[in-house]
Amino acid sequence: MPIRLRALVSSLSLSRDAYEDLITDLEGLDITTADDLVLRYAFEELLPLISAAKANPSRLKELCDAAVASLVPDPVLGSDLYATESEFRLGLGDCPQLGAINVDLSLRLPLYGVVEVAGLPNTGKTLLVLQTVLNYLLGHPRASAHWIDPLGVFSPEGASQVTRELVLRNASESEDVLSRLQIAGCTDLAAVYDILDGITSQAKTSTEGARQTRFIVIDPITPLLGPGLTNESSKGHANMVTFMRHLASVSRELGLVCFLINTATKATPPPTQTGKTPPPTTYKPSLGPSYSYLTDTSLFLSRASSDSRRDVKAEFQIKVTKFGKAVRVYW
Image (cartoon, rainbow, N blue to C red; front, side):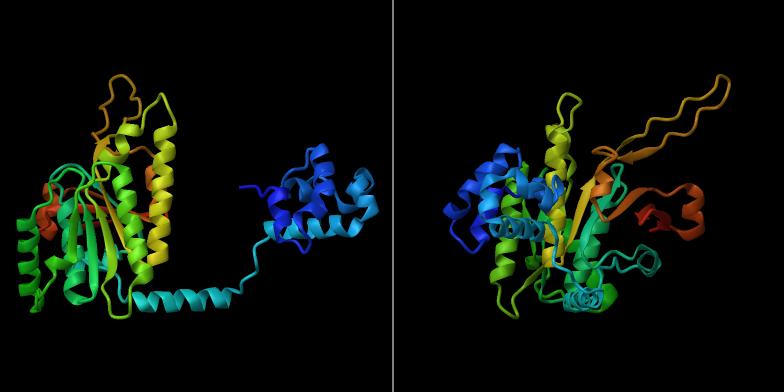
């Protein structure tokens, strides 16, 4: 957002009144922001046009320097960024995993970021995320998760069953795993924003040794964003972009993984020539084509074909889209 010159002068050496005549002359030339001052005229071109600057050119020079400084970010060495990121990642521990070797080797979920999990009904979306979250909580006693449930369909019995199976598989202790999985029913974005603000505030005031939120799950995200996406107004799309950017900012700041479970819709097939067999029905994530660009990783789950189930004894197929590449994993 452009910085107005009247706001910029508060950071200079003299009082605001000392620059009043200069600001008034600049506004007479339709120069009201730092961008205008830097990009429209060179200092030598601007000096003869402003009567206040002729009497005291040093103040115009000081204002120009402040405008340039406000537009140019401070330089940072790549080695410093790498060291900061490495230290941050080291404090987060390891990446979340499902607990199935064949899936984890190919899936490689991020250490932090926003992950979309889309697919048709009964394709294991909730089970995939639930098992990944609980598997991580079992191995990290200080980690916790927030599960946002807009439709009120979360199954405590299912979570308990998954926990028991993971405990038997890993020969570990369940302890307080389910108590570190907090469930909240939210029917609108305002309530979700409140939860995110609470998580952020708690993280900033937490002491060493306290529980650390590592996951936020919204299951599903579709009813929170979908109703606002219409052809009549762009407001719904703007709300979606704003929310997704806020979610990405929270995940980066706090170092947590946000799982967003999404539904799927039928993709429009390309036109076919008369007499030719129409292409098979395909599906794509809901919420429009731009939604997937607002996430760090996108997973699309579907039922595995009969050939795939026979070859690898898989029930579900996971298509992983990351950095423009797609791989298929059978689960």
